[in-house]
Amino acid sequence: MNATVAAISARFGPPSMTLRDGRIQDDYGSESCAKLVVNHRTTVDVTDEELEYYQDVYTFLTPDSLLFYLAPVTTWLSRHPNSGRTVFDSFVWSLDRHWKAVQEILSSDETEAVLTLLKSLRDKSDLEYTYGHCTAIFANLPN
Image (cartoon, rainbow, N blue to C red; front, side, top):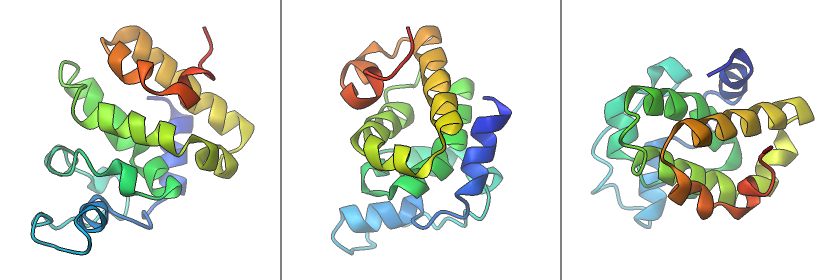
């Protein structure tokens, strides 16, 4: 991960919606499946355990919250390269779903940094399934 991506995530912290908030929204306001309490003030506060516990909630987060979690998720992937089909798949699919809104809150240089990072991860990993279903991002990735 490069300094620009880390700065993007830091700029959107603390997140307006945490991973736990995403689970509660997914569960129509119920906290019964949101047992793990999180305190994400900065990206270093995000643990692997939290990313894995709440791995399927990214689609319920706001675009700015997704960008906050960009650095922790990509760092998680670097530590767990063979586990991309959990945390990272869910994150990238959700980023793709919100791509237009994400681009609206990023500068062109930041957008390019995010796309470059995603291309690099695509090229280094067996994540073709992820990218094959992310048409908004995939159409913008440099070759």
